[in-house]
Image (cartoon, rainbow, N blue to C red; front, side):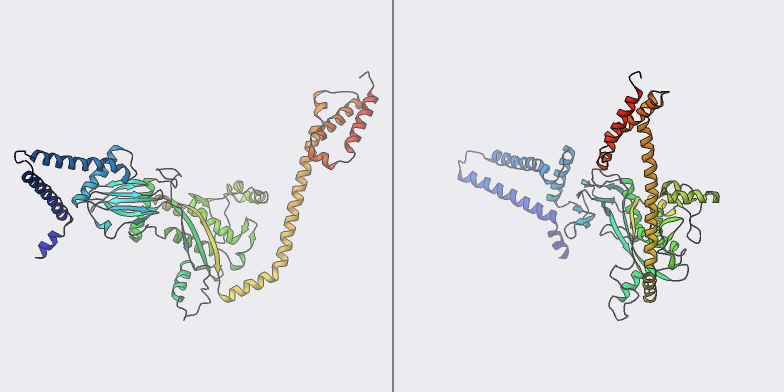
Length: 475
């Protein structure tokens, strides 16, 4: 009895029964017409011709409307749409799924269907298809038709994604009470980035990493970029690590990498050094650590640090050159003098098909006693630090002022010597006349300088006239 009920509930059986009922009804109508109409007239041919026209018309209209069901342009794709519609009518269709921003949108149980199906991905989605025994292909934005044994293994979002590891910005991990319902969750988040300085002080950080599947914008029919090779590598690696197949399968590896590097570098510095500047790097130590984390995740090579957090030069004899380049703010040339090491994190991310866009240490968390110590230290030293920064600004201003003065003298000398450079004269008055005239013309061509002059331009004109009269007509 149960088997009969299960047979009657099959979609194919229902559709065949419905189609059979339609044929029977149509044939009965033909028989009635035969008895009510002229008995000598045979309507059998008309009945079957109408039935054939009906079936042909249904197929024709399906072909016509196929181009409006899905956004396809090629004739083979339109024919596949017709095949899926016919399969749907016969009850043997596979899944019809829409993927938006890496998330699957489908009716309940749709993904479990097996048979020829269709998958429509928006411009920010990608997916890997597989059978029960192997992965078959990686698909990107657009309409794709699946075979009877294919189904979605996992999906991915092509947007730039954000991962944050460590305490939330509003958390107080070292002040929260045991009775707080969020105590366990806050402590677990804190432990993910908890690290110790060289002098044994515990510090936790909130670190944000922005990453995406490596591609070129516009690649693969997507404004976000779709690279099949990198997409497959990223999805398959994420599946192995977390096996979350019901949503984009990004694991937390990029953020965990950033946290491990954070622990490594923080252990090279004392707490008092975190907010100070060093002679060997122009930023504060915490900014320097942030930059080093980003370099480890975005570059194949980066500078080596010793156990005290200082950069290591290729040659100790170039230390003065390195410090000079830093003072001149020529950071790129200074980095060329440093000893480099290979970044294993970058290599691993590249193998996974991922690229890191940015890394930001958003906030640091300290125990209450350390936080109070830092506040007191900052209060005691803020005036000293402000004066130090003011002296640095004044020094920079004087350097730029001296540089500008040298450039101004150089420009003046070039303008004043234009005429005497083209024509030499043994007459001192004539030579002086050419110098004054070149200076006069140079001033006239400089609107900014004219605004700052009062009577100097008129004085130059009078001196030029006096020298010309002194030279006399013979010259």
